[in-house]
Amino acid sequence: MTQSTSTTEEQPEYTIQSPNRPFPLSAKQALRETAAAVTYEEPTAPGEPWLAHVDEVPADEILEQYELTVDRDPVEVWESDSDERVTIYPQRVTVDGYEGTISPAEAKERVREEDRFSPIEMGDS
View (cartoon, rainbow, N blue to C red):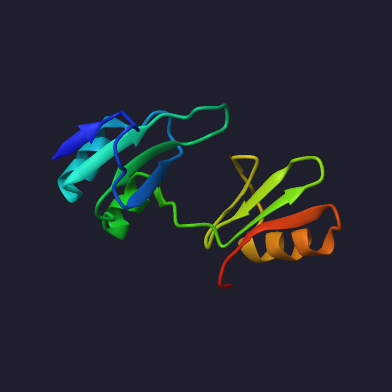
């Protein structure tokens, strides 16, 4: 089992986010019991989440119990002419790294309507 706070080695396949800063010990224990490889990444800027990189996604019950989310690849990434970045994931939206309160569908609609946003990455949605 690998457990590290270093980000210099290649990260396991899945990224888990915790709204708690840092990951609670009980959540770390649950991840260790689920995955063979776990590495942790501290935020590099205010508002960024704490991350765990794992080789296997925990069961939904564990994710719900510790309020963890699996960070999938973004569906779309948009940037405004004032460098505001909107990242749309399947289940959530972030604006400049902060979790937004609007749904992914609503975010897609809004950024497409506003001329100041340009697409950076577009997925298969």
